[in-house]
Length: 261
Image (cartoon, rainbow, N blue to C red; front, side, top):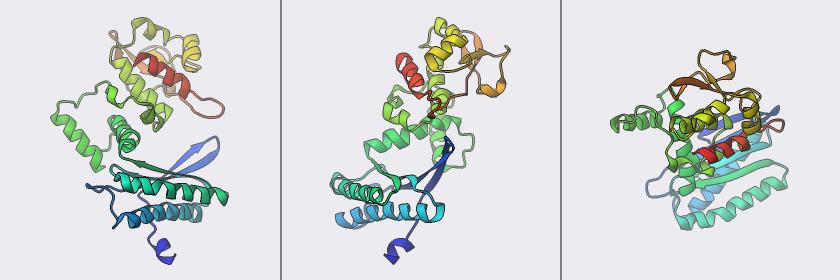
């Protein structure tokens, strides 16, 4: 037990503030070219299970919270290990539930890693100005040599419900909606309708026009700064997206995306 606690570490911690409450996200990421390997099969399963339990202990001990999401993520876990690991993760979840912790334990691996970790990172990378992070820097370098340094519509490959589920609703508007608008798949009539308050409220649950023309009258605080070029004019996209118990814009935006992507 002492060794279990002394080896405590976590790769990333995030805190979400919503509806007056804090939620902690703790992520351990393992990358082994031939698949996650901490010895033999049983040792690997035990060490991953221990990582999740240890992270739960640290979150409770250091951050004094019982509401958290604990994630072990890897692009490659061999099937036999994953098959033996998941019942152990279920046991961890049952143990935490039994002692009154609102902790959710997740393993994201293989194909799910691509959809839920890699693809969302690639989607949001265009909005990251700081390239000190080596992965983002490497990805942008590849784009440059492929002639993709200019923004393009988000590839259809990345447009999956699993990927969208890992993105906040504001990012869906700022990146996915923008990509659809820039792709030319939205009619001129739809662009005009999105400039109407009533239509924006009915279709996208917004109390102001989703699109405003640059140079017109609008509150700049309520719109993203970067314009989108549509039918010869520059427009700004509304930035006031929420997903709370009081106002949840996600289903409205996802429906609009589904109908226009």
